[in-house]
Length: 76
View 1 (cartoon, rainbow, N blue to C red):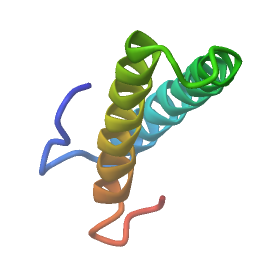
View 2 (view 1 turned 180 degrees about the horizontal axis):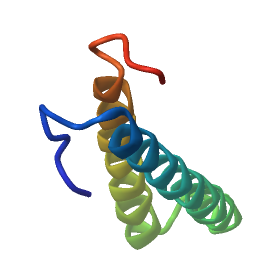
View 3 (view 1 turned 45 degrees about the horizontal axis):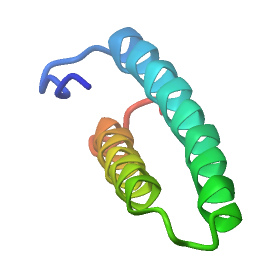
């Protein structure tokens, strides 16, 4: 995930927004798959727990970047 540049124009912000939404969507599907597997393991898989934690952290980072794209009341 790249950092938001302070001087991004609206086109760049729009492109980055769509990239982040795609990344976030993929992470959400991965999270559901890991969570389903963890439930099937009766919550007994440390590996799945760790992988799920990493997915949640990455999702949070993307959400923060998405939110930062619109701090200056851009078109988003």
